[in-house]
Image 1 (cartoon, one colour):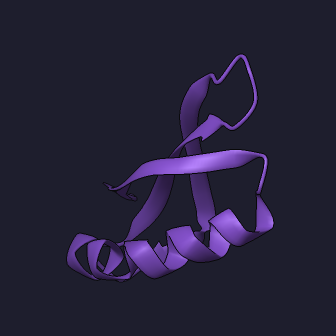
Image 2 (spheres, rainbow, N blue to C red):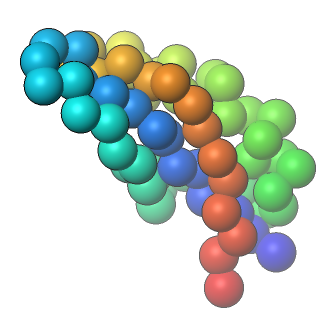
Length: 63
């Protein structure tokens, strides 16, 4: 079953709020592959979104 990556990120500047950012365009064939590739994909996302700081990732099954 396919899975997509969700980034958990916080704003770097005050108010430093955190939230989930679903990356619908980052889809893997299964959750295991998603987890394996999550670090690389989070790093790539972080480089493009310097106003936020990645604090975690999770993989969500898609229907």
